[in-house]
Image 1 (cartoon, rainbow, N blue to C red):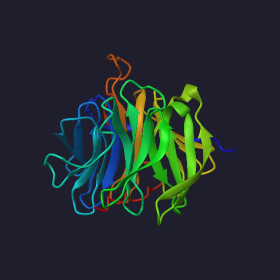
Image 2 (tube, rainbow, N blue to C red):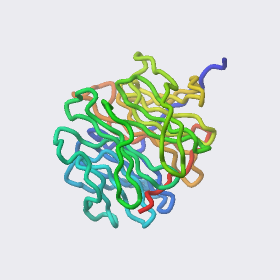
Image 3 (cartoon, rainbow, N blue to C red):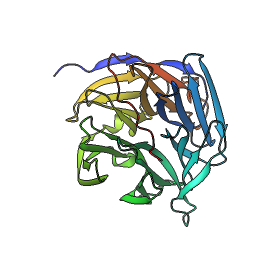
Image 4 (tube, rainbow, N blue to C red):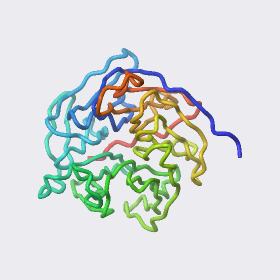
Length: 292
């Protein structure tokens, strides 16, 4: 087996985010949106002007996606919300677990039909307290997976027949059969396990070749895996808490990487919480906007 390829990520925005997450490229605007979950901020990075601005939304925000109508959809603490136009404040679209103040929403993404998937987790990391939800364009919310501990990355294969999913404490990535027309999932199975010495699997994205790119919490890296789960590459990142990545740029050939700050300042990672970038020589799949 060939040795995994290796790349080095470079700093783009020295944001010092407390918990940077959820990067997504908006092709219509040519910008990257991402969030700082704990500070309740939605960031907007423009690589042409090399500027990053943010909106404070007033509560934890786990994920952001563009919408077909030109705004943004968010997975905030209390459910799914929308921002009609940047930089307006969000308004709630559909509540999730409104009777459970101990949980919040976390990472998410849209499938190719424009349904927004995002999950929940317990604020104190109690196991099995979360779920994965699907928000349909009409505002209907459906619980799709139960007994989740930390709902994290969700992505789909290029042929739209497989959905990949990460529940971080499980230590790996699961695959489901996916029906793109109905949005139903079935036949859950383990695709790959991440060696605990390499960190915990966090957010993920799939490239145009069908390979998975997984951010590794406390792993100092993003790792690339073949569709069969075999390791294929490593992006070294100069901070420990690597959360998620997304392909961006006009050709979708830049990989943007979000990170989180350590609990205490660390001299060996002065740019923790920053936004990083690498050009790995492969392209990504375009992000589908929420079809509201």
